Amino acid sequence: MQAPDNDVVAERLEAFAALLELAGSSYYAARAYRRAAQTVRETRASVAELALSGRVGELRGIGPGIGARVRELAETGRIAELDELERTVQPELVALGRLLGVGPERMREIARVLGVRTADEFRAAAREGRLRSVPGIGPKTEERLLAGLERPRERPRRAVLLHRAQALVGEIASALGGSMAGDPRRHAEQCFELSVVVAADQPRRVVDAFERLPPVITLVERAERRAVGVTVEGVSVELFVPEPSSFGTELLRATGATAYVEALEPLPMAADEREVYASLGLPWLPPELREEPYSGDPPPLVQLSEIRGDLHCHTTWSDGRASVLEMGAAARDLGYEYIAICDHTRNVRVVPGLDADDVRRQGEEIAAANEELAPFRILRGIEADILPDGSLDLPDDVLSELDWVQVSLHAGQREPRDRITKRVLEAMRHPSASCLSHPKGRIVNHRPPNALDLEAVCEVALETGVALETNGLPDRLDLSGADVRHAVGAGVAIVASTDAHSLRGLSNMPLAVGTARRGWATGADVLNTRSLSSLAALRPRP
Image (cartoon, rainbow, N blue to C red; front, side, top):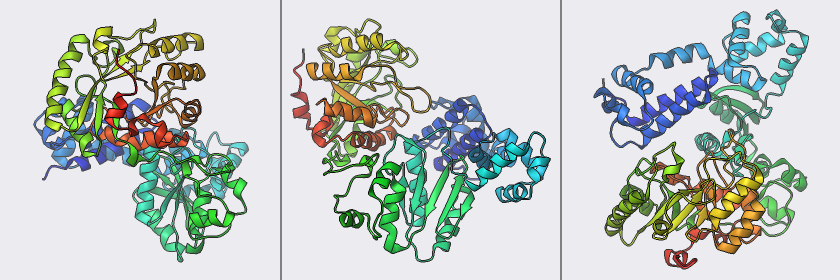
């Protein structure tokens, strides 16, 4: 048989991750499979062939367990454990259970006692009064489950990351010929409300097509011009199918946020969203700003097309997956003028880091790459770790040689406000500091923002000229939109960067720019909209 291509291997690993989540496995197990799938997609060689030759374990993030499953897929075209998961997990029921607040094991037990295998069979059994035949379900639990079946779209306990929400909603909208709406369209950093709006005179065809889409496991609500589908990951997506003459109105409503839309009601019916605003006598407002009632003209928000370089990227010198030359060439192909290579320093410890000798040797490699890529420019940079006393993890003479210095706090995110603020302010006052990386240190859904005093940080940023980063890694988006607005209001410069650890990671710039837009940032507020010469002139080197 022909070995599966990398897209097929990645899709199977992603399916494995989704089913592990539905089965109640640990977050880290599912994440390992998702990261392995990302590695597969980024690998130019055939991963199946690498597995057959026993070399797939050489790829970063593919350990013996995942490697064995990839080899099995290459040899047989299937993964037996994945087939077993698909059979035993019962994703349709488990997805419905998530909406009802019932865990995977309990949902499967309820289904076994009721003798049902689909969401429709479960609903029918519940409405027939059979839930009380299940041990442990009394009148109150039955009432709660029945109410949940009638109102299934309660906000999930865990938000969907923005990039996953946009990919999911975008895929559905594209397949149906509609538009993305809800939290993903507003570029919300945590997505709870996922919506698609499709204009149609005959809504039944659209709803039927929605139900048949591969990402949609089951419909938990269906009306003439509205449906709610649940994906294999347990995420609900709401479909609206207005008449073409009211598409613009429904797109505005479905985009939200609720407080913003309620302040505009009643909305006039219009086929185009801009027509709605015109009828209200208001300027069209970018979705990123629609979180609360708004009046006046919006600022000219920064555009992705204005970005001229990426100032925070990693390579194989630390924990990246591509070489200096590969990252530079990929950035050039995106139309950029420059890129800054900012690998980690030794103090991070959990990943490989550079010492002074490494930095200088890397500088030689950067110089050679610049000769090959000219006039494109790779900047010598570093992501220097902030030590407990606020000093940086490289000698001053080495730092002074560099073009761009990101100062970053990794350890100590739970320190008290005064201590963590003192460390960061001391680092920002270093004469070589260019930008403070991911200032609030949050990991969306897993680690809350640190206690850093952002007002004090902005004061020192104005004093020193150090910029603040909005980091485009999907689980960071740090600074957040609200924090960007605070910084921009104080007059502090923002850098929108990807923190890319791979060629694929460079594509996260829209996430960073979107977050900056949510913070009302204009092109003038974002440093990397500027040319290399004007960027270099901002601060004299020590």
